[in-house]
Image (tube, rainbow, N blue to C red; front, side, top):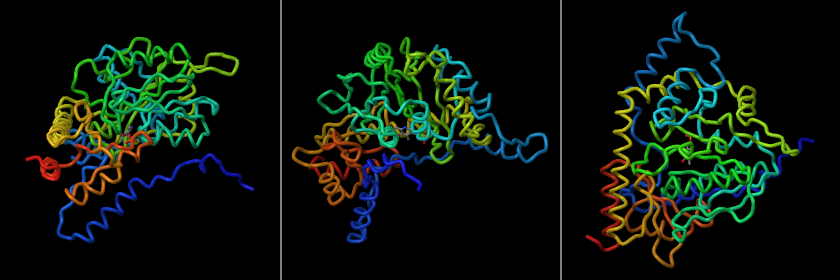
Length: 401
Ligand SMILES: *Cc1c(COP(=O)(O)O)cnc(C)c1O
């Protein structure tokens, strides 16, 4: 009899995006002449930049030749990419990361989920609420005890240190869904906590490229001592529009240790390397050449233009919502705007009202966790034209001109 992992039965069904789709379909059927604008999408929309396309074309041609053919690559990623990562994402910021501390993968979602393989089931895990669901659901699947850290306007979306001791801490900044960031000083508190408690911080910085303000760390390793307590996840998805191409990486410093029950120190880098070599055969050569091209002079410039385009959309949304009288957060170092829905309304009631009256679609905050109730997420990933029109409609709906 094949017994199942019963932890899966503890997972909450997620009806968020299917419910949104159903509501939108119903509205469209009843109102065929109304044009809906979707500001709910968490996916990039601008095409892959020429520098990455060229690199991929070149790689495709290369593997069609006898000399250039590539079979299985290194499980940890090709050296050319790991070198580019170390130099551009770390050395240039005075952070020392070695090439063998970088593992290239096919996505930060997988990395954030798979990392649980190297940790014990009886670790206690701290996770913010609201949250990107991957951390939560993968830890439920593993049966770990979860402590929720509420992030609301009351604490300015800065999670407070847990009262009870936790072993693993997921942090994501700039944050999805709230669009908020931590300063170096705030992040340092977590690094100090992790040091004191021998915990590990799993730091998701998928939105790092959107940081514009000074004093907001681009990497957790900007905090002294973080290389002894933190794993960092990075992705080309939101930076360079690779959500479909698939490429990311994880950094596990050699100074970072986990512990056996007897308290013996074990290198997490070694465990992850072993896990990677056992279960993964690397991201494709073509894709890694595309990722490398994000660091070329042209690549950086072109990608920067896309990021600025999204950031300008974010600014338009934030300013418009504020003029319409909403309290809103994020939207500065992030493509996400998190707004407080009007008093006495739930996230879903606001969703319905916005759809009916402004024909604009967003994402109800309650879909990201209990403490997301009363909030609503809009994203800057739409076109400029649609973004402006959506905000005009919202302003008109809430009687501002
Ligand atoms: C989009 C996103 C990622 C990126 O995931 P990929 O698998 O690399 O596409 C990671 N973390 C968060 C919070 C995200 O929103």
